[in-house]
Length: 583
Image (cartoon, rainbow, N blue to C red; front, side, top):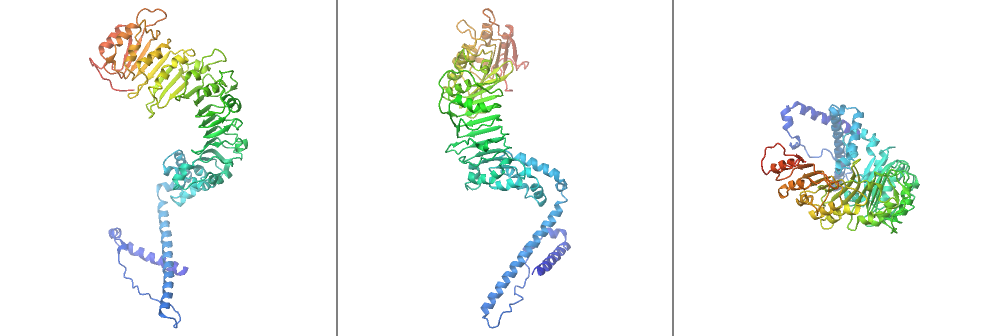
């Protein structure tokens, strides 16, 4: 049968091609050959050679069965031949395309770029780049299969092919980032179990470079050494907490630099690797008080540069004043905390940190700066980084949909942020009084010289009374910047015997305010004479993007020997002007 098919079908296709070539080019393109009626004689030209003693119906059934098998084989042979012929012609045609003339090395480089673009992407096509590239053509498939680095990223989109990717990646290091909840939704809600995933991946644990996993963490297969692991991030299921394996990786992960855990129970004797540079704990319970956590766990990580503790609870709180610090973390650059006041105080008092430490605290409803930073003349308290603050910026975050406000304390000498207080979902009723009292709480520790309050068009951080409270405890201020604040702030700055605020004020920057409601000249005049008790004249006023600025105001200020920088200078407008925003 094979000989009949290999002789007849190629000859049939050849004769049909010759006939089509003989037709004119126009008719060949317009004519739909499949729509033509072929005048076949459908009477079978043959009959079975069965016994004459059989009934006619049986003979016809035999003929039908033979014809069905013959027709099926003819269709199979025709489809096989035509598909392969067409693929061969297309392959020869593609060889003349420019991209097929590129060397394999350049195609491999392009494939590497495709993999890099897929990292962290939500685009399904990008995230499935290895599979997509390997299905374009036989040539591309061969290149993709011979490029192990293309198959090293295993994520939620391709986790069902984890074993395939692990095998094709050869000896390359693996980057694993899997959220089983996302994976199950991707694959028609067929639940993918952690045990099944790790069954494919643990044989390659020596090649893990990064392992980010969200799902059921109550398992214990991660007990083999991971000599190349640099990042470990585990997040337990939403409805449960997991216990962190104190002997994970058999305590052998010498290159581990980043450890992030969420929704875990953590023992104080849990093994935190000595080479850690970044430690993130979120929504977790530490089975011990903060000072013991510092003494036992953090002391084991002397190279820490970043420490993040968000919604972390401790078992057992030392309710005492800060004592001598005992745990040196000389490389710590930033510490981000979202915890109870006493826990924050206990932890900070148990550490020796550089004076350049960036301390970031997310303020909860119950947080109180007096509890976090009690004024003490002993035990080297407050922390040295807090004591160096002389610049305070209070900024409404326009990019935060929840309306958050950031308070940043910096050092004027090196312009480094030393203290950041984040008030998420800012409430003027709840948070504005706490912000206004910052200078009162930290006043014995710091001496503010620069103050900035930058509100937004639709969010005012504080009113004039609270601004008055803030100034009352900031006598050393020399420069103030105000943006989008109530006009009454300017009236508060008028120097009088009853409100002698900021006697050293020299520079004032007003932005995006309505100056038609205030008397800036009165402000400047009140700060011009009687330089007693260290008072200095207000020497510079900068006006940016403010409404209803009169040139008479500018002239009057300059007549008081005040340097005025006005962004509408030279416009030629007289009277009231409305300036365009040009931040």
